[in-house]
Length: 353
Image (cartoon, rainbow, N blue to C red):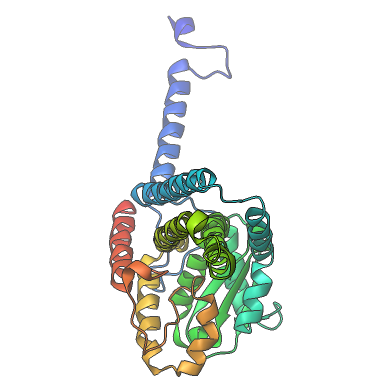
């Protein structure tokens, strides 16, 4: 009986060995549960611990709407192309020119934005805290360290550009550094890096190619009708060309609305991704409210400086005299963005309980 209950393994019984294994299992289970309950941000400052990478949850409904918008844009221009071919419109000359224009804009977007906004690239020695903040968030996205630039203007804003993470650039204004707290600025930079991580520049470049193609074709048709197509050949092909021109205007208008809707969805997506990565949706909501509340005191001269980069900014630099219609805006309504961020904050707090 004694020999049956003992094993030739160091003089310990099999029952004792199983008790040791059970104790170790319980230890690791308790350790795992403690890790699951660990809160990722400091309760006092609410600044994320950025020593490790963090996975984020995608908004499936938002992603579905973005892909549906892209699908509708593709369907629209596929039908338009068939119409142009049926009407005998020459496209072999138009497509290469527009393609070269879009490719140049795509590969030189960072330089063009820097030139138009007056942003100047800064080194880690010139802006150590800003570089550290961008670096820690870039590590969370598992992306290379982007270039950092500062715009000398009182307008509180920020933007990111770059065709991919290896060629990314993040720019902030002097005004946003002065008006936002550290956690709010970190949330804003997280939003901007989300645009790069989500490949927004690539998606919008494809969408804008189709709209630019239509715009170029519309201009060519106008001048052709004005100087050649509606004169001596009025009875032959003038009516058909007018029909093509009107359809082109309609397609351009609908395509522009779809692209604007896509940019608004990308803003929602950057809000969601950036808030998940920074771990503090409330800070981004506070920053958006603070930025929008200070625009009223900014001179129009400073606002015009950033208007060329409105599609890239976290909040569009619209002049105070200009109204905004949601349908024609590059950004969603501020109230809706803040509401979604507050709801995301509640969900994240619930997940960490």
